[in-house]
Image 1 (cartoon, rainbow, N blue to C red):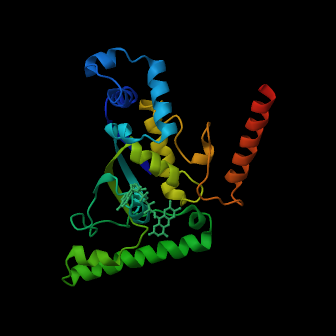
Image 2 (cartoon, rainbow, N blue to C red; image 1 turned 60 degrees about the horizontal axis):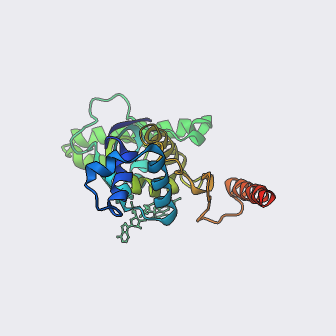
Image 3 (cartoon, rainbow, N blue to C red; image 1 turned 30 degrees about the vertical axis):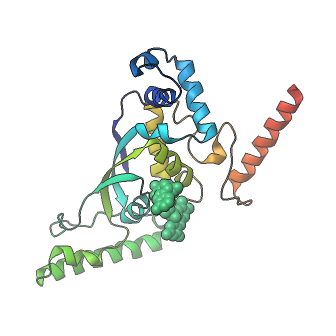
Length: 242
Ligand SMILES: Cc1cc2nc3c(=O)[nH]c(=O)nc-3n(C[C@H](O)[C@H](O)[C@H](O)COP(=O)(O)OP(=O)(O)OC[C@H]3O[C@@H](n4cnc5c(N)ncnc54)[C@H](O)[C@@H]3O)c2cc1C
């Protein structure tokens, strides 16, 4: 999987803080921006997150490119409706000349020699069926119906920061499948470089530095247990201080 942050709104931390300040100030936007110190930006962004006033985060957009992911992943990804997508089309890209279908192998299959052989065989049979159908006069766009979830795909997609909070909350969680989870962590790493304050407290909410929580409430999850431990240690430290 190759994940790239292709473009983003310039200076996203400052822009979101400016949009938030706009709500509370009668000054011209330029003047508000001049007065925004880094401390003020951080304070405002923390305030918005704590109060769940999330619409200012919609001004910051992030466009990613991802190659070498499965169609199983892309199906999960496009369920996130608050984003825009462009995906390599199997109607217009045809597979007649390839030696082997480009496909993703889940680690559980790659690590099991017997399963890996079955998997590779099934994909070879699929490619042969596709070619035979096209050679028999079927259009490639119809012959592709034989393709499995494993086949690789490429996408360009754009999320705003608010929608990314929701995406990271769901897909950095241990409950998400390994492939989209890997994608989510790569995306989080790249947006943190350009918007460190917006994404300071983003990811699976059980990992938040302040006020961690878990909507899954799965008490068997190892991360749930470590979250409870951290929360109780923090409570003890805080009660010791007061
Ligand atoms: C671990 C896991 C397992 C899953 N398993 C399944 C499964 O078995 N079957 C399945 O079908 N899906 C499954 N999903 C997908 C899941 O149900 C969501 O469709 C997907 O994660 C997108 O989330 P979303 O709707 O919050 O995101 P977005 O579509 O990006 O929406 C963002 C937010 O906008 C609001 N919103 C968007 N559209 C509407 C609307 N029409 N009306 C009201 N509010 C709206 C909601 O607040 C929503 O949270 C799973 C997801 C995860 C993370």
